[in-house]
Image (cartoon, rainbow, N blue to C red):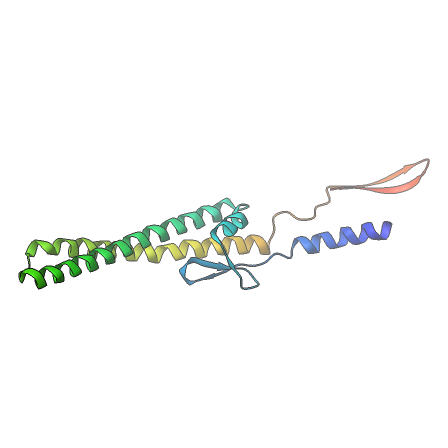
Length: 162
């Protein structure tokens, strides 16, 4: 029994430090050490222990969503406007100059989306780096608070407090 307890006490610290490192790839995708893609919920569960990394990840994903909405909204405004101008030109033969406003709005949305889409990857990358640092250097592990030598009428022993 004593040998089993000693082996358990020896292997607990080793097992607690064997964490998987995460890898960031383009597009906001995060992979574990087995090269399996993690879903957003799985990543948020992993980041729950580090509030800074979780906040950075959530901010990055919010920027990614906003950037996608602006980019695809701008592209669709330009494409829809262009298609409707072509259809009107086929039917009526004239083009109204006020129909250029959606081009300007769509182009503005696309230009606004570019820096937002560039910035989200930096936040997610920084969040992954923070978590990897935490996994490499855990703040808490196997700690022995105190050890005492105990003797009584039954014999001698050592008391270990975790």
